[in-house]
Image 1 (tube, rainbow, N blue to C red):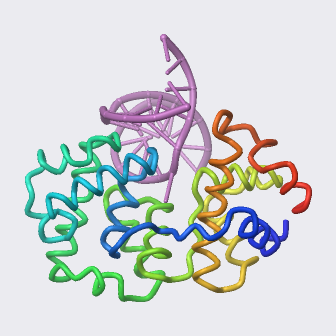
Image 2 (cartoon, helix red, strand yellow):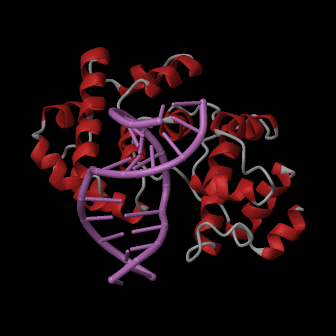
Length: 213
DNA sequence: TCCCAGGCAGGGC
DNA sequence: GCCCTGCATGGG
């Protein structure tokens, strides 16, 4: 599979996706946790709620009541654990970095990734989304859509790190390309795979698949 | 009514 | 180490 060709074709078919849709780095971080196992539409509602209550910054979120945060993010599901997790993240940034997200993110890439992975509720995908979209560092996140996409090309049995490495070794080392391709693969999955998410053969439009093969 | 959505953690084996 | 389950709301 020629990932550069994949990128070019998807970009031509769908246009730029402008991910991650967020106004601040902190919003990316919170959004990355909220979007776990739910739809982006519900995350948008939760983010709107948090903004309305002026909670979408480390200090406010850390000092807020758990109940209020739970109420604001309820539409995203798993709201009790997510509330706890974004509040712990906030407290971590407040206690360790004076509330400065920028200072927290400003460190060598692999060290940042390790720190993120040590936080509750932050696994590989969430950590890598934050590294790429909040810290603007080269890291290719592998999500469910990307796995399905890869299965289409016989890469179904590769684990997270193997897939990430595969993308990173076959793409130009440009943050913008990483950001767009990750978003475009999700767009592709959402467009052609709404009813049968596990169907490998439809995880790519036939026309697109033919060109890539 | 049933299935799923841009995962993660904790337990059993 | 891998596999299973709980977490929970909202939309198709």
